[in-house]
Image 1 (cartoon, rainbow, N blue to C red):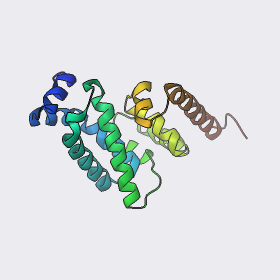
Image 2: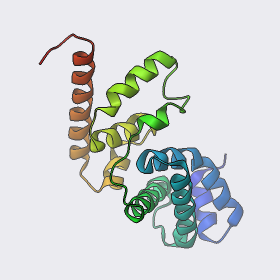
Image 3: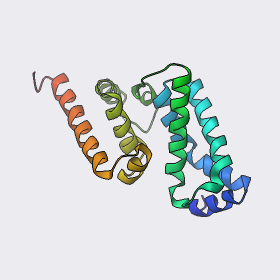
Image 4: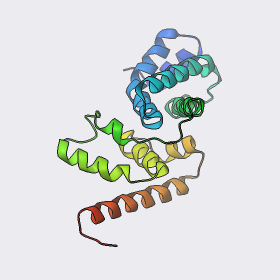
Length: 177
């Protein structure tokens, strides 16, 4: 694939082929995030479509080409929240997505076990852990996307990991309350 910054520059000048190449490079991440948020494939596809259209219309306004993925993901998240608001959704569960995500785990039984623990986390814990571990966003990117400081992201990651560990230990009888 070509250099992302170069593709973004070309897309900003109206090059449709460069834009299509950019979207192709990010489509699986976009879809996975959308499904995690809206919990429904049809709604996820609607949100992705709306985000891509909005991105195409606004790509000339993007100031720094290096932040294309973060910017696109923020647009997508906003579209997902709009879909949820329009359909009166108010929560999401990433575990449903992980059952179909081959990269999420190598061993089916282990994946099911992890999913069960993951389901017990709250919405914010699920989001931050999935962005960091499954979508490979950096601390800085998560900070930009969620509109919180990098130290807040680190704190939330630490707390979310700790909560996941506690759930694991309790479920496996290693710790009792």
